[in-house]
Length: 74
Image (tube, rainbow, N blue to C red; front, side, top):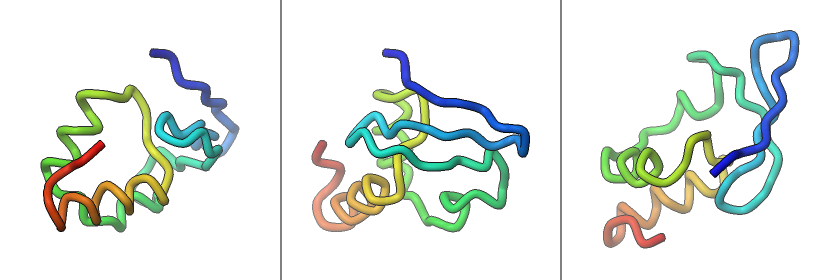
């Protein structure tokens, strides 16, 4: 599966979330919004096994919440 993204001069990129289609910015660094999230290993495994790029904040939050309740559901 190919995911649309466009790199910019600051080293980050615009990414299309493979789960919902929302466009968001990834800074490709430890300063990225996702670096501040606590992501359970089961969510990391779920994402790594399905997608080649990041997911948006909304989808990541939903997966984290699902994992906290009953494991990853998607």
